[in-house]
Amino acid sequence: ILSKIKRLPLITGVWGNPDAIRKNTNELLSPRFKWLWLEKLVERFILKSSNIILVQNPDNKNFVLRQGVDNDKTAIVRIGSALDSVHFIPPKRRNRGIADLEALGITGEVVLMGIFRLEPLKLPDHFIRVVALLKRRGWNVKGLLVGDGSFHTSLVTLSKKLGVSKQVIFCGNRDQMWLSRVIPEISVVISPLTGRALAEAGLGGVPIVAYDIDWHNEAIETGVTGELVPYLDYLSMADSTEKILNDHDYSKMIGINVRKRMLKLMDPQASNKVLIDVYEKLLTPTGA
Image (cartoon, rainbow, N blue to C red):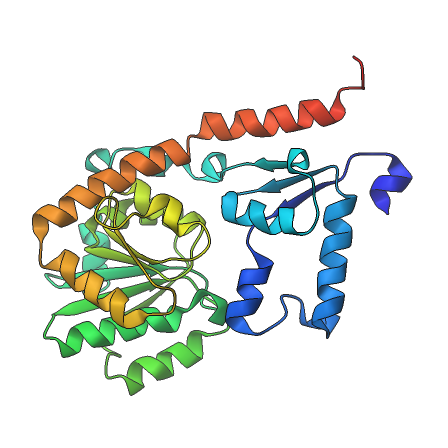
């Protein structure tokens, strides 16, 4: 309505796949709509009213196209330019994060990390289940959960129930410098459903195990840049994590490869160029 009144282009950002999220959670994205048909009606109205729709990856774009939007009204804009520049520094040239880990009481254990909001949608409980499975298999493991959210208390309870309350460390929100130091020290990053955090982990050159959901399969290719496992299958996630832990050469290889791939996917200059081209096209009068 505002774009019509002001006679200005409407740009909409779609940073996910609402259909996939609803399918996997059986919940509305915006509970205030109360009914699925109403939520989808509003989504489609906004998308078809937009002059251009920005998406982060082909999976998100396919959702938009299924709403009847023309392909030429979409643009894939990666989040590379939104990432802190510290993550583009080669891991070996960064300050070490050993002191940060020691401050958390970690000395010598295998360390797993999950970086995401502690909300049910992000499946942080699967991270805890992976830690528990590895502990049962005899691994001296610690799991760092970086982030915060409404699921925190439930996750603390789950860690106690599974007998890993001493293994799981709730780090809360951490700044970008802390992440840039600590990520390269991690044995494996666990990614049930992550966006920016997956890019940061990949740029840190750390081995990654991810679910096959959203954009993960662009970055993570089993045997090349990490381990991609079936969505919601945390047993396979634990198996792949153990596979990496048991093979140092494999771990090193996929860590190097995932950084190379992420540098190409998240090139800030390429991201900026796409966005600049979008705005120039919208703001240039027809025929100018």
